[in-house]
Amino acid sequence: MPFGLKNAGATYQRAMTHIFDDLIHQKVECYVDDLVINNIYRKDCLDDLRIVFERIRKYDLKMNPLKCAFGVSSGKFLGYVVRHRGIEVDPNKIKEIMEMPHPRNLRQLRSL
Image (cartoon, rainbow, N blue to C red; front, top):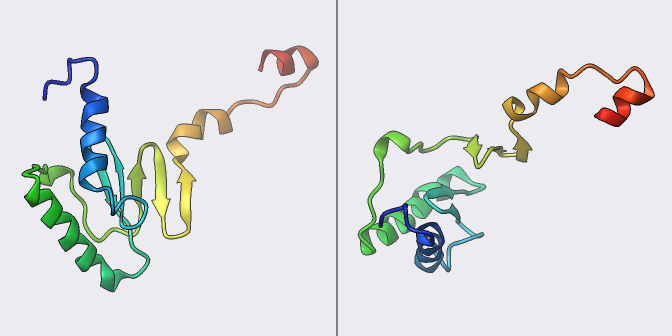
């Protein structure tokens, strides 16, 4: 599907939602072309991967192996860092804000 079309992104997201309907928010987080298979226990991870790969094979989807990472405990997803503790803000995104000088007077505070 060419992504120059106006509704191509929404159509693709709708297809992904349809394909992974019963798995979303339980085993899979899906946003357009990004899939995160999340599991609390490492031993169940292979079963979840098998389920998702069967679904990908059933609908004849393709994956880019260079963009895949398996068995990681944390990773970046949609500008956030997903870890075992939860979702955190990517430090690279807030670096400039953290390094800003503190306002010294009322005028600088208002301009902030």
